[in-house]
View 1 (spheres, rainbow, N blue to C red):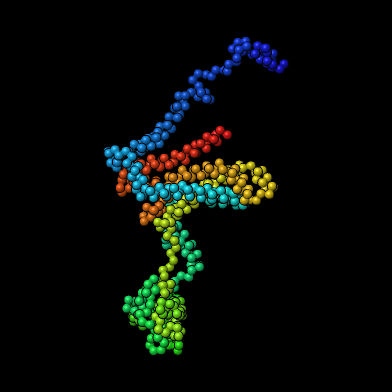
View 2 (view 1 turned 30 degrees about the horizontal axis):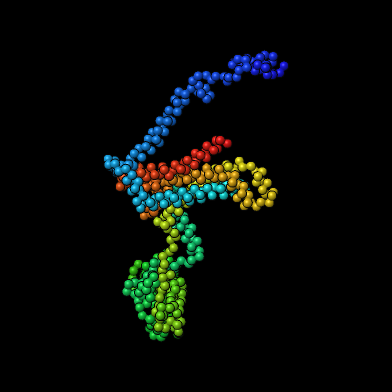
Length: 468
């Protein structure tokens, strides 16, 4: 016999009537919970006992430092004089702190955006290649490196010397491929020579040259040539007088081991080949020649007669040393680049996880309808990944607001002020040479206020996800 409702509100099941606890015709009451119990039967004092250690730690490590920082920010450096909001006013009037605030804004805007964009690109592209897992592993590996180690690595990467810094080694190689380096950087004439500095690193003869007679042969001795530049050079040779030509020799006027004579081509002295010699008349170059392997040159007398000879600065320009990555103008972008190197892998892994849970039928349907890959990416993939992208972006924004390690390690002393951020300024104000814990506490409170809106957005997102 199946159960059925009876007229008096009872329920028959298998021939037996369930008695209504409220009486005939009354409303059924829900079974009473056991007193002193809550969800899953846990007593309140048991839950409090388990939560107490965490609450104590939270209060000691979070709540107390925040309260004390707010309190300490209202006093002067000694901690005895009450200054109210004076430290906050000083914070916004100090040039160094304003620079730190400007740099923090640059960090918050650029670093999370670039890291998230690269993570999205890597996550999408690695789905289409066989070795995508290996690529993800390589990109994610920098996350296993501490900020300290990463800072040391990139301090070397950005070193100004191309023989030590990887960035400048690559940059100078590309530059020298398209721009011919100077043949003898740093070379110059003796102070007593006939050549005189003529501005911009060039050297010009004191007297004009004339065809015919002694003035038609002009030797140009130089010194301060690096030995590596003449190691394979041929011995210098005296230029032979030629009709209708103004000739001469350019050589290294230095004999290793001594014994040489000044302004005289000695047997062991090296030729300087590949130098440009110009004839200048009225401020205009009228003729030019390049020295041969034995250092000799020849200019047409018809054009060079009455001109002065000049060795242009391009002959002696110092070797290109690359970009000053850690100089005041580029230090912040350079450090942001090192941060992106570390955190792009983090963004890629989270976005790839979101991409794995995306309904593939939507993508296939769009392709069947004739959508291009760019349209699929822009109108389907990105909108569906929007929650994940927000998670990554917000997480990185909170992270960069506290950035300290990379700036402290990578930026050299001359560029620390230009690369300054609020966390580093907090450290310098509280524990640096001019200790002012009141100002440092004010910076800490201000940094907390900057983080709170981002934290609020993150909490709202978490609550929305829980409601789904």
